[in-house]
Amino acid sequence: QVQLVESGGGLVQAGGSLRLSCVVSGSIFKIYTMGWYRQAPGKQRELVAAITSGGITNYADSVKGRFAISRDNAKNTVYLQMNSLKPEDTAVYYCNVALTTGWGPKYDYWGQGTQVTVSS
Image (tube, rainbow, N blue to C red; front, side, top):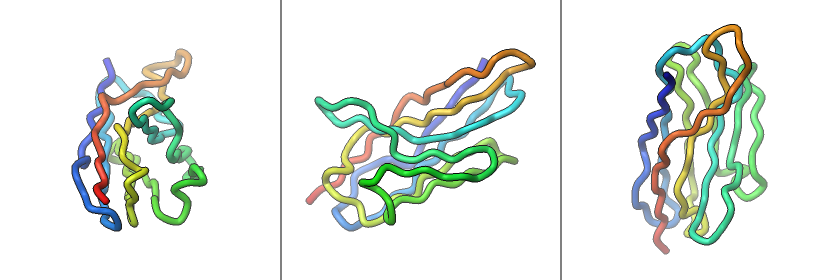
């Protein structure tokens, strides 16, 4: 069984910063891409940022230059540093990880979500 536990969400004023963390635990064989998605009320879930096992990153245009994704492979943890936050960043943020639990296929796993609210 695999678990993803997110932390770091909260309420912040516009221009402020937050750091999200997602710890992956359980029967893990290999972790591939780790990423963060977000879903605002009435909108579809969208990719915010992702990082491959080799450290290659990808960002949504709306967060480039403000957010930074990183990972600690020894701790099975992915981070999202969010700076210069805007009210439009308000959403539930979800951690997503692609991994294998053995020699079988790769599956996607999701965290429970953490609320980020940016006040104007």
